[in-house]
Length: 339
Image (tube, rainbow, N blue to C red; front, side):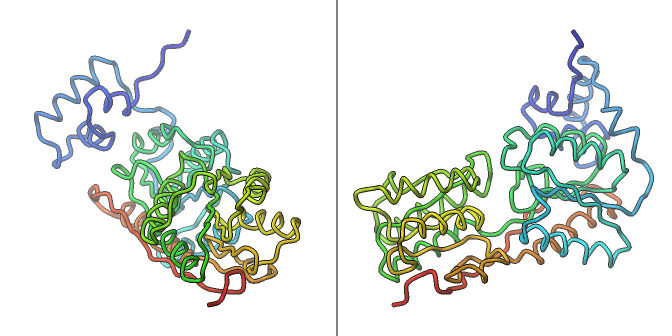
């Protein structure tokens, strides 16, 4: 049996410190105290740690290229983010290589390896809906390749990221429903492993609390960000003795599935049930009725992510981790009731 290679993450876990601290300690970074650096280096030596040869052997030359990993290549949300990335990258003379994980954890890992092989100088990533273990990003730390997350993020104590205020956005949706007379507000949540799922669920609960509405577990369904599971969830909601009079979901793909199922039940939107989307996908303007939705500043999100990455790439020393939180806007259209 092949012995498992010791990683930065293993060293960090043994010492109860962050991976970034271990990485800097091994390089004798001035931000790390001498006793800590010695402690890390002694442990690394005792465990026979050696840097990942794949990552370390491939870099060390400028390519003026940055890699991007998105969950899919067809959603307007991600294409708009990529446009923002390209806008900033081109102004600095950088090229962008875009890859897709197809919402697959295994494909996401392969994307990282492929981008490292292409000698990108940095990577901007949005994790897939099936990614629950984030250890594959250790390779980038070991190679000193800058990494920035956007939208669906992880390990925010180690990597910079760009997100929107998901909690406030979900609260705003609940408040809008309440102000238009809705009282049984249902929510189609996403996978628990995703940051956006946890934050938007928190916002939903806080919104109910603010409006002094009870949290009814029957009105909270998981969609797993899958159209078929979302449709099944909506069937269950509509079959309740007291079905919801309002519904929103973690993203527009889920909400589009909900719209289809609601119409299949011969219900009128918004007269029988109000509906709100969460990313204002390009197609929100082309469904019937037009979809009230939370507008994400997707182009700006891409610009911010690229700016963070290039700042790290061009810096002569390691920069502190930075988290950027952007605001959203609720655009009211025809899918919610008018007062």
